[in-house]
Amino acid sequence: MTTGWFGGAPSEGDGENVEEWYEDDGPMVRPYAVTRGRTVGAGHNLDMLTVVAAAHPAPRLRRTEPEYHEILRLCRTSLSVAEVAAALRLPLAVTKILIGDLIAEGNLNFRAPLQQRSGHHDVRILRAVLDGIRRI
Amino acid sequence: MASAEYDTAPRRDLAVSVKILIAGGFGVGKTTMVGSISEITPLRTEELITELSSGVDDLAGIENKTTTTVALDFGRITIDDNLVLYLFGTPGQDRFWFLWDELALGALGAVVLADTRRLENSFPAVDFFESRGVPFVVAVNCFDRAPLYTDRDVREALDLDAHTPIAFCDARDRESCKTVLLALMEHLITQASSALPG
Image 1: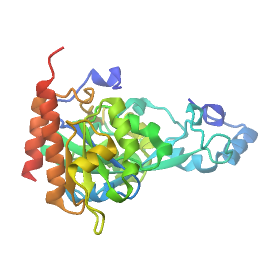
Image 2 (image 1 turned 30 degrees about the vertical axis):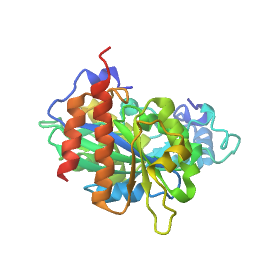
Image 3 (image 1 turned 180 degrees about the vertical axis):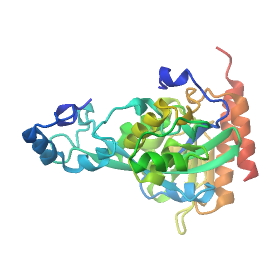
């Protein structure tokens, strides 16, 4: 895990620190600005193929950032984390944090992908995939 | 690895996802294949590479270049209400190999696309899947004017096991790509059926 200037939030009201924070960030500021600088959130264990969908009923969304609203709009139909990231044009790591927030607050339901060791998948799943490919 | 806190509340009403990887050297037609078979226009997402301390030698010591992005192209085939298949093109550059591990985790299997003009570009992908125990098929993308080889030529050149299927395809053609994926699935089913329990 890389620490350093990204390891913790700058203390508020400390002008000098804040200035340093932005000065050395380079391209890191923009990808993570939407997560307020967090590189680790509730979503850090999400897989890029975890399927998410908006919860019904759901608690009122308390977040004001447009990205959260956009995710809930996209997830009226179920989508993978990777598809949400592509639609938002945000890096996967950032998208996972935002989705993790919405899961933690009960606004999104999720289902992790099948994670059997490669070569050890259930034959029924493999046959279903084979039949599905035949149909397209 | 799935997180325990999330797995306590799995949602059976949501579809579950599975994935197949499309690998091969740079410019061999991975994204073309994904696009030919996907029900959606292939999507591109980016993974941020931030953990420089994890031994990415190429980038170590380059100050001011603390992050880089790797583009991943992927497509989707909805199998039914409960199952969605994603097809992921693996990053072509060797320096992003560590990303392959995450991609390979839990994959059903892989397609190694090969170009007979540059067969050696397929070696890293073949080695990777063999070493990780990920079952795969080799699909020779038949580029115009590329020299024609037999199944045996390719098997020998790539030093493949006798049971690894080889298919010849045109990555631009949907039916051709379907044939490759079906060959992979049949290979996976054969393997899974012959594996003894335990």
